[in-house]
Image 1 (tube, one colour):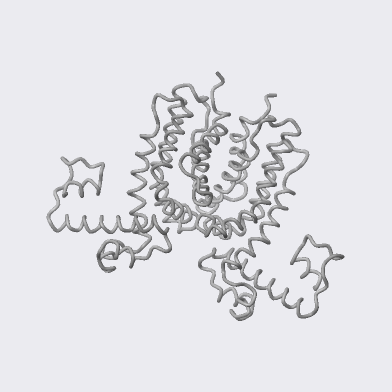
Image 2 (cartoon, chains in turn red, brown):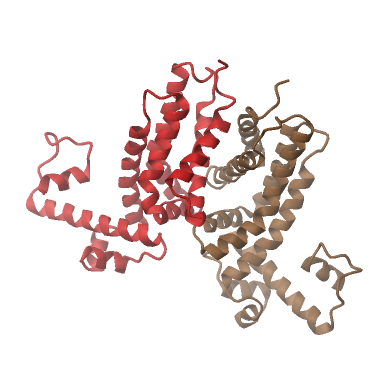
Length: 220
Length: 220
């Protein structure tokens, strides 16, 4: 139990190097994680605005005071949830890309895995994107840092396509990655309003990838 | 004065066919338009959430009661503003496309005109996009009807490219138009957070159009 709590706090830190927590510190970590989990559940169910600190506290089985002892406000709590989720999503995307497949299917595999790993939390995704359009500059900069890991996965796959000769050497990887990412995100609206499931999202993404890669593929 | 008010209500209706309004009706139309103008100003300055009905009423020089006599709530007021603006924007885009230019520059002209016509109301654009990610299904469907005119302009330009032989006959116009639109909208975030002006937005859009059209252009 104690190990799992420590692992949750920072999965990149190996047990050997993780600092030993005394009982009080460990309890604090557990409380913080409980709040985060309750917040994630509520954000995923309702989205950002309707999820109140009062209900998050209720979900975590503690007082609102205990929540505020750990997080300054709802925005900070939201960012902490996001931070955990984005790190997980970057792994999901990375593992979705079958390294033996062609470039198109490496990309599609990664992005389909992304839909798979997030469709259950669709209102959370919607809340994240909606907030990304209207937030203070400092929050935007922090959220760019958080989502950078996802963008990097797509960029890495494109880079691998240049190395393998599948993509032209002069491909603007950054521009192309950005367009792929815009299309990927935009499709969530179909999930939200048109009831698209992972299968439809993936089929549509495949068509979009074909259009987006068309000019960058090396002539065979 | 009276004519201009009538024209604002429905620019598509010619004077000859416009119904004559009696004094009371004309006053009602003027009041409604005053509220809409005050609301647009406030939404454009602050975005959706911080713009209160109280301040909109103040801006229009009337009571909140007078506002509610014309609009059920802020959401309805927002949609009414949007409805006027989208009709104007569709015209702006259409007029931005130089019919004598090549397809790429017809598209770029239209979209650059779009940035020109909207950059002064950036927070309003942000509010519109943010809300499009998190609204009731009925509101989403209404807003799709409102924005359809803009999407149609891009679709029409692509269709003209097929007729002229610039685009391959088998081009998926709908898919391509959607990708162009996603990229166009996404660029507003650069305006919001990275201080991009129309020049930078247009230069970036040009690069994006080149990537997006690459696979659809007829081989010369």
